[in-house]
Image 1 (cartoon, one colour):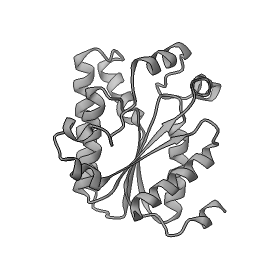
Image 2: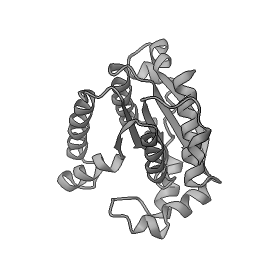
Image 3: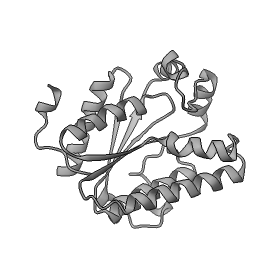
Image 4: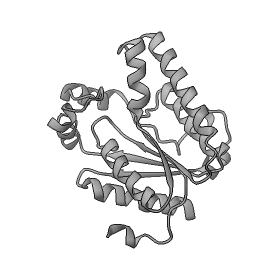
Length: 218
């Protein structure tokens, strides 16, 4: 049993699995949730599509439309306000995201940061990296195409997004963008990068669990 190797046991935290569409965040997060739950931790799991899909249903898919972003922002504010009020101190918050260095990425990072600081939890941000060929193969897989979520499955768009955007590294230059001191940010943030190109889902989830333990007890 892979979980028997983990000592000490994990504690609640705000955990973000960040990466490009198709890298495997959702499947890893589902396995990670199972791991954390087996340790007796309550896990609130918010896949990014839980916030994106309702926005699309109401405001359409055009992300250049200001109404789309206004609606999405309102959904996120409501969701994070409810999570802030969760009365159970044994709750871990697990998110998947695709935050880039664009302003929307830093704005959304601030929501995660405020959730962590207001609940006095470490913010563990794991950046998934993957070589382009593997990313395209995963993003266009039959399993992903059959998903009932509005997932990106176009290989050309996946390649274009990598050319156009850079994933957010919150350990670099983010403090000034969200108007806090770097010392305050780094006292809460635990940032790690993980190349998942060759990993199975269970191997990736196990590696993330190790990162969580290091972040909590460091």
